[in-house]
Image (cartoon, rainbow, N blue to C red):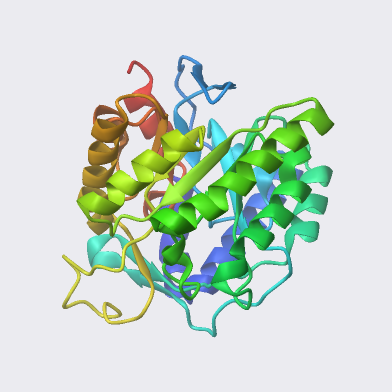
Length: 338
């Protein structure tokens, strides 16, 4: 109810200003212990990646890039929170404006460009947080790191976040950092995932704790590319795949304002494409690698459809912008008996 009253005001603001104001409001609400969520329905815990999730619905990366609002977001009822994408060094991201709403299709286009305060700032925020649930930390590379040296940035981030993460997501699928999606190629995947798995094993020995790795992939993949990714997930024993990031396609929004803006499209128009990729990857993996479905979840039945397509967990982002906290409880209820 409160969000339905606040939404017209937020949507009257520039999209990025509204984003920042919403996070600030959630931080304040959490500090003051104000109720900000709908009553969460009962859900069965879900065992995945060696972790126990209290429900199947999580927050996708991108909303809280620096881990500044973990308690506020957790209060919405999510079974896990994923923060980031974070890079080794701070970077401003792309020039503004870089975030655009397409309300007629419940969609967003963004070209944020991994804007964040750097991994040290994120770790400091996590250390200050009182959140004790499952925290995913999404890692990437700095914009000025050559693609052939990307592994150095991912390793640097992995080392710094390892002790503070429930799991770590390797983001190679954002369409905004230049050439990042090249890392989804076969040789590039081997050159990235091999060193990350070796470092994971070393860190597990050092910390006495195994932190699983997830790989986040794009929706704009053909069958051959999906097979390459499926084979790499198996070969490198990656603990999960997150399916999918935003799309460069514009089907369903072609004639709307901002549709010609560069960046990744999320929200309702992404649902079909991301779910098809999820189903195709699930068929190739045959249950060998757990999948987390994300992309276009705007209703509880969308979350359930992700599970029916082969996911074990789902994540929300753009749906939260359009529907508010009620969507979290609705999605938990729709997936509770799966």
